[in-house]
Amino acid sequence: MTAEPSNRWVSPATAVVATVGWLAATLAAARFGPPGTMLLAGPLGALLLLLLARAAGLSADEVGLGRRSMRRGAAYGLCGLVAVAVVYLLAAWLPVTRSAFLDERYRTDLGAALRTALVVIPLGTVLFEEVAFRGVLWGLVCAGGGRTRATLLSSGVFGLWHVLPSLRLNRVNPAVTGLVGPGPAGQILTVAGAVVFTAAAGVLLCELRRRSGSLLAPIGLHWAVNGLGVLVAAGIARWNA
Image (cartoon, rainbow, N blue to C red; front, side, top):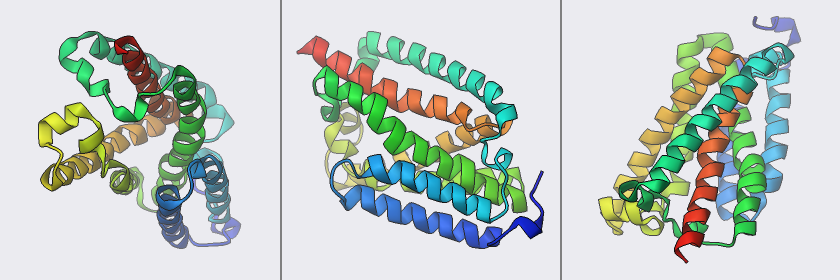
């Protein structure tokens, strides 16, 4: 249920603009700031966005953090995690798909991979992105424009959010390099593909949030895709060493 206007300090439209602006600032900080910037900017940014949502009149339920939906969200998130684990194990086992995990960014020792999967990704990526995209932005747009509009806007911005992180993907992932090549044309195709793919993934994550009523559902799936991907890639690199 949408909060009463009397509970609002700022309008939802202003809050949406502020949220997108904060996303842009955070992305710039992550891209050009010192290593580990998102370990601080992620949790702090998530907190600030939740305060903004509260100032716009949203309740805990409307940003996916209501107590009543926690159990259901956790169940959805666990199912997503198990599904991703099964797919990754099969893909790593099959030679035809194993090359997708041969990413030079993850050719590191097991301790560093564990730190990335269990600390950097949860705090620096998943927490901030889920609060921002499926929590605050989705909740703000949904309150005024409905679920479909909220999903389309949130997912579109989520796709654009991955432009900068995908700029080097065609040079560091052999599977992507083999498909599009390492040159400028390959980079353009890779970035476009990353935007489309992550926007589609955003739709799925929004749907999980809608069906469960909780951010725990997309958080579980999001971490599984990123965190388990790092662990599997590190495991394959260690096995091949």
